[in-house]
Length: 322
Figure: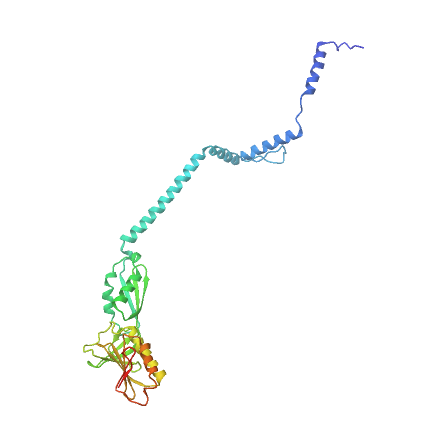
């Protein structure tokens, strides 16, 4: 049975169009998901919050939209932003350099850091501070920033060898405090010719013209002048030789030493024993080698029971006594 509309051109067109419509591919769920993800990434790149069709959520505020708009606008000018950062860094570096240059200029040319006062502290009232002040006069007016305290201390030690310690304290911005320590006396010298008594340190530096009964006495012979003060008079080696020789004779032979004589011109040491015997030593030779002769000749010498005019230990490899 044929219907009247089956042969109509309209009907035929409708039937012929239906197969083509059926063959058109429909988008799958996976493609829709990828498209949605792409839209989400695009919204994040534009700094906009994701929007949904839900009527419960509210869209972005006006100021956020405006902010994001300007952010996207300035994103196109990265070179300008980098240039601004570079200019800012250079400006900061220039300001820091100018501040440092200003400080250095003020430190060098301003009188703020120039030394105006030097105070002195001493541990011994016998030390003459006027000489120390005269020695440090050249440091007055110097810049504290360029002052070498080590140079100042060495200058005082070289000028005053009797000082055993010198300490300098900087009192900013324009003062110094100098503390000097005088060496302790170790021996008492007695010049037989001039009848002068002088105290001397263990380094051989003369300290003052006075006597001390608690210190060992060294008689100075063959020196007709006054013993100078604040100067090296005996060497530390000579003083240590005197001390070593006394202790060895007392411990090894049990003798009593009543006088220690130093012959300035001959550089000799004469030790006077209680029985009147005098032992001669050469201060320019090894004292241990010289005293060894007494040990070898101990069977021949009786230092305790016999009085000898002298026992000469100065001649190498020979023991002479009379």
